[in-house]
Image 1 (cartoon, helix red, strand yellow):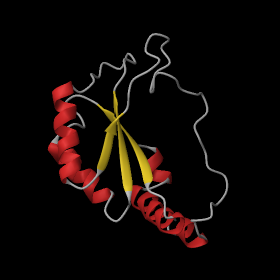
Image 2 (image 1 turned 180 degrees about the vertical axis):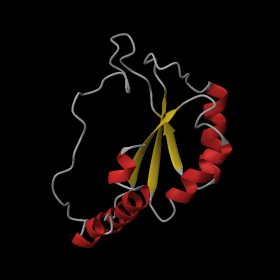
Image 3 (image 1 turned 30 degrees about the horizontal axis):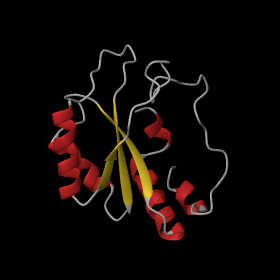
Length: 133
């Protein structure tokens, strides 16, 4: 993803580890379930790698229609995925879908302006930002 050029994943996850260590709070991740794209066992292996040493909770979200041509994972695929996550030691839940009737469900709304963080948080250091360059 283009944003990873400005905010590399390794830096993001290093910051998340620091956040969890400082706050003693688990990090919640939202994961959109897309059929035959990110609902495979190898995707759980990748998640387990990135979440290593991060106390985490994974909220799984069924993909909602957005006109992209992508399809949501089936119930069976989601059940398998949740089982693999649990086996990998990752807590997970399937979020209930709401707002479909109003086209206001998760992933169906967007803003014109992307989020741009502007200041350091308590768990960040100057060293974290120096590693970007």
